[in-house]
Image (cartoon, rainbow, N blue to C red):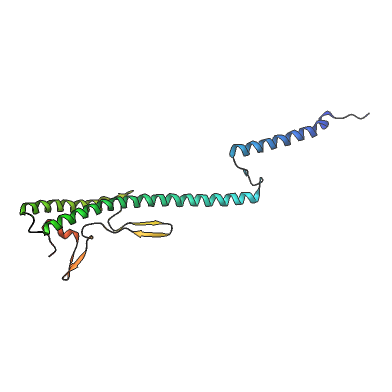
Length: 183
């Protein structure tokens, strides 16, 4: 009589159960991680492609963050330059009014000059204090870079604005301070 070992008869069932449990674990892992490839044995070629794409995504995200930072810095410079532009328009109006010696009294010209001096100080203050992340934006020392291109932001100080030459003399916006006039 042949005796069948009960343990050996159940081994195929145990093996099938173990394989089903491993398959279930793999499916649950894929569901939990959301990835079809969780280890090299899942798909070696797919893993290489996946890692290449991850590296490219990380690089693009870093470039995107750098571009956003540069955009914010440019926005700060642009806003400051907008205010400076408005102030320069006001300074021009005051300078033209003061140049009209027949239309204003001396007291009106002095009041205009005080206002003009205040405007020029405001322009210089904005040029000195406009900054992004501690970096001065309008002192002529800052460069904005994005996508392989760069822009050097010029100085917005009154000594560097409105430059003109007359009779061999160089004048700037700062020369209008304190009653200076372009003759």
